[in-house]
Amino acid sequence: MPLRPYYLRILGFTAVFFFWEFCVQAQPAADFSAWKDPKNAEAVHEMSRRMLSRTRDLTGTAREEMLAQNLSALAEIAADPSIVPSTRFNAILAIGRLEASSGNPHAGYPHALTYLIDVYQQADCPPYLRYGALLGIVQHALGEIDPSQRGKMIDLFLETVASEFGEGHADPIEPDIWNWFRQTALDGLAALKTTGTEGNIAAELLLVINRKSQELGELCNRQDVLTRDVWKQMLLAIELASKAAKTLGDLDYSSATDINTEIMTDSFMRLIKVVCGIKYKIAADFLEQEKTSPEPAILLEQIVVNVKMCTQSIVWGVRSGFLTSRPGENSFYASLQREEPAIQRLDALITEIIELSAFFDEGARTSRTIAVPGMPKEFKFDLLELRNALKKCSEALY
Image (cartoon, rainbow, N blue to C red; front, side, top):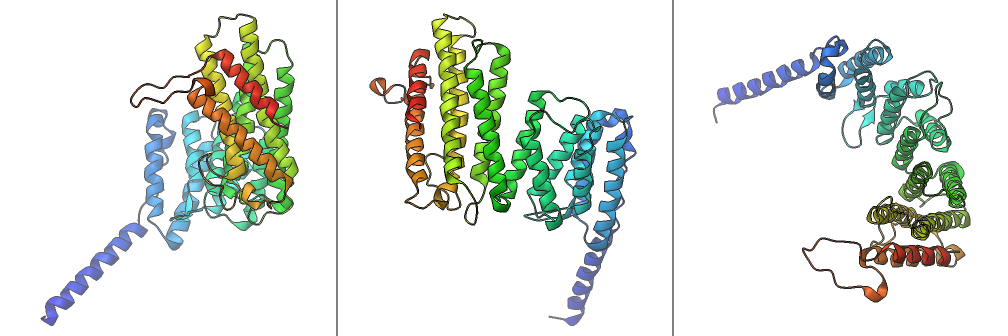
């Protein structure tokens, strides 16, 4: 091969490489003035996407400088009360997605995390901005974390999950909105995987489950259990307790210490027992009082959905997997010694859940039929049979 074309080709590749490097390193900063125009509110999401994409192509000092510029500009937008709320929300979401390095896992921008934690802890910050900050903190939890920030994140998540009414905020937050905060904080704890120092994360989640179980038990004793307000309170309690149980299954027990297996087993048992109990009462009161609202079919579906959410979450909490799969190698169940009493109780719990799940799918054992492919699936039981199945499950647990 002649030497001249060979060297010209090398020079050509080198020139293209350095030209590409120059273009990447010389990219201009985003124009944040357009973000502040109310007319552009609907386009801010796309502006944010382009800004983040531009940053990901940079490396070294150039990346650090642009991250600092973007954080400063976005923080200014988020803090400006004269700017459209949706734009302020998108600005704080963009801060949560700033990355010090790309890849899998990514590494969030540490200064952005510091800012987000500060915003979340401001009592006079609007709830929607606090929630945006919380989403950003969870985003950081999904990637590589600065070890100095890990403890702060855990404390923040635990305080949010444990707080009943959004303490620390200047204005009251509606229970259903605060429930979003608590469930999002649970996502953050699930991302971190750890059971905590001396099992403190697992212990706090069990406290939440037990408080919600107690709340459901108290609601079950009320005479007006079929009212809209009681139903809403009950649903929020079941949702949070179920998510906490599922989060326990997302943690790694392979090297966990100080996990009280009896308390954990008791908590799972108590939650299913009380959920089945209150749903049994709702079905019984509906039938005995000959109610007509809501429609029996609607009530039937609501009860099944709520109970399934609870049982499936507890199965995940015990096994770190679905009912049809083997327990995960880092699961709570796998961490137990075969001679521990908790093993027998958990096996009994799973057996009852399997039986209840089979009832939901196939109806009462005496009337089960083979499913016909292509036919729409319907519940193969009525409200009376459901009531009896819930009572049986609740009474079987100890």
